[in-house]
Length: 377
Image (cartoon, rainbow, N blue to C red):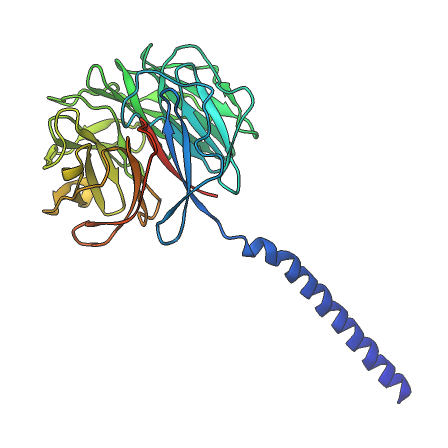
């Protein structure tokens, strides 16, 4: 009997030791699980004195300035005015990339939202006046592309683990005249060529080389100044907004990136106009024409089959002069940035696309925002 009792006690001791180790493992894991991710908003002003302005975006949409904001630039100035799409983020590298007069600068995004300039910035491959900047991830490799307005090229880089850049052997890649805004989706890279009104589209290969589409550069009929490009989340449709108050939609060939204007395109907007049209903000269900004019700042179009657009019949105002904008991946939070402030929105009406303002933070002095990016960290 004594032997049996001892055996039971030994077994129970082993059980409690196991439970103890499991409990310790759970406790060790809890801090990691408890670390909630933060969302940050970054606004790039590449003009002197310029800087990158940073806020934490709280769950209710309110903005709290990040310590150290604005973060000073080492490469500033240039000709960009408005939505030149001069900043992009790599989630894998946790790095922001910004285009400047001399090259592309890299910024590590820390957990608290502060930015640390990556040594070697700006990475200067030749060319000058780098505007649109985009990121493509191919497996474990990350590539950065930037348009050079001065020499009509797109320059390509591969990132190192620390976020620094090395120019690709095949770089640069020819664009149209005056490449300005640039956006990347999946393996596709799109560029708005401001001077000749054309659009360039490319497929990024596994080694980062850009292969232009058979239609590149593509010349849409009767274009009146287009400075930015807005692909949907899957890179299947590309939208632009020109100074003739026309929103254009283009189907993107899934293999070659060739562009074909949709049969119903262009779509007439009730906002925008000469120097007022800033681009298209794309969410899952809506495409918004964005204007500089506060009284007529945005107009939603419902996205239909194959990317066609239908105006929902409303338009709205903003408390700022909007220059550039962004939305998070789920379309729950939208940010407008202008010379005089930054505003957050949510889509309050899922049928018409009505925007509901959440917060508005002004600037002490006027700035010239050229890009806004939302980051989850």
